[in-house]
Amino acid sequence: MRWDVRAFDLFAPMYDLLMPPADDLALRKGFAVAERDLDRILEVGGGSGRVARTVGATVVDPSRGMLRRARTKQLETVQASATDLPHPDGSADAVFVVDALHHFPDPERCLEEMARVLAPGGVLVVTEFDRSTRLGRALEAAETAVRFDSTFYTAAELETMIEAAGLDLRPIEYGFETTVAGVATGA
Image (cartoon, rainbow, N blue to C red; front, side, top):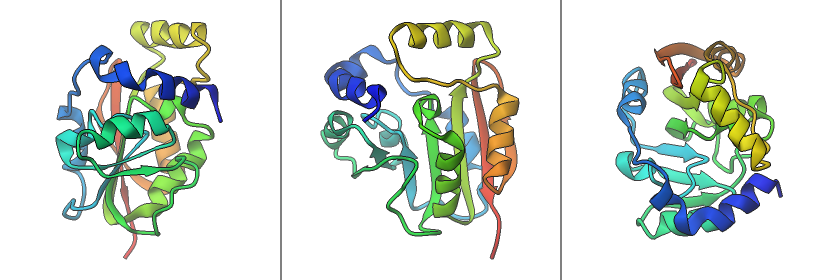
């Protein structure tokens, strides 16, 4: 188990108290580029469900402590790593990751897995801190200082990874918190 997962298990009881409320405007803009109705939504790396509850998503996370918190919000949860999602091909209308991709092992593999579970016309939305911004560099340094195994990305790197996962790129918002979407193609 990665240090990040153990740390989030320990941090779970205080997570919602210390984290700012979820701002889901960029997420909703990302959902708007989908080419299908969004009934089956997964939040991968969803932790305590602070974002999932705003859109009615199922929380997928490897941290038992975080999933316990999500269940207190009456959210459906699945304990799994983003590198090996237990969902069938084409079983989700939308998948999203908010401020968590930098914690994922093998992010390219994770994005491929998220693309795999998307139905045609479904959308993947990723909101991540851009390491090329001043705040992004500060956050990267802070997470390194607390020994998180984090890898932050620029907007261009996120776009490249989403396209490499086989999705049709749809840029949404840029800045410290960058949001990029990809739509699943195919019949």
